[in-house]
Image (cartoon, rainbow, N blue to C red; front, side, top):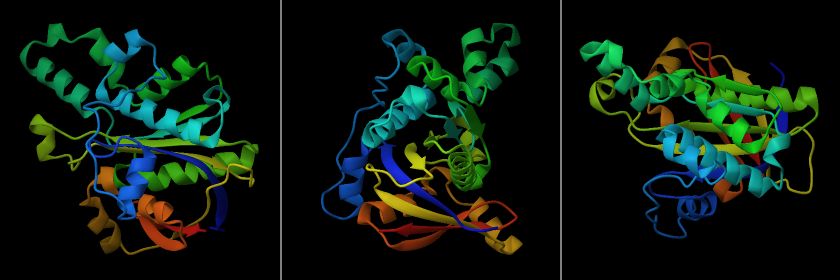
Amino acid sequence: MDALTVHLEGTGFWSPRWADWNTAARALRGEAAAAGSAAKPAALALPPGERRRAPDLVLLACEIAAQACAAAGRAASDLPCVFVSAHGDLATADAICSTLASAPREVSPTRFHNSVHNAAAGYWTVATGCHAASTAIAAGSASLAAGLLEAALQTLDEGRPVLLAAYDVVAHNPLAETVRVRNTLGAAFVLNGEPGPHGRATLRLRHEAQSAAYADAHEASNASTVALPLLEALARGGPATLRLPSGVHGSLLVEVLA
């Protein structure tokens, strides 16, 4: 495929170690020791009642999305969004499966409501009054690459900025034996096909064919940390070139241009 060039306008980040992108960027540049953050993302874009009911995955997604929009100086209500998670809400899936195995008639309607893969996108668009299109993607360790391609294609096709949020929460209980997510981490980006006053970096994306062995090696990686090489390159200001796993068909070559 031909290379796609997009411009990064804003970044959001949250993990148990770094509560925002500025803190994470300093640590990734080696300028400061990692500082502990709050136990949960603040997710202030959600109304208080929704914050109390929302699962951790939704809080994470809404927190990083809000940070990216603020950094880009963009109104969340105006942006089409792409929400990406390798496995979705693992805690909710575990709770539903455990209940089905022990007392199937007691499955909570609220739990079921939160189990669908686009739940985070739903919470976000309702809370921000966004009527633009939303997309939810799951592709295992290739999820970030799939999300970057989708968001880049959307902004280039539609001529408007697009919000991309990629996030996963740590797996517990029986799911931890089969799902390779060992860290809670989320990163969000506002991408624009046109350069603008809020541009922070330029990304050039190109799909490359790779051997099955390359793809298989990345399937064993931790899906939630695939974003870290990209984030480090952004923190250092580029230029840098890296490859993200994009499944059995190859990899996504990402050039970060200063």
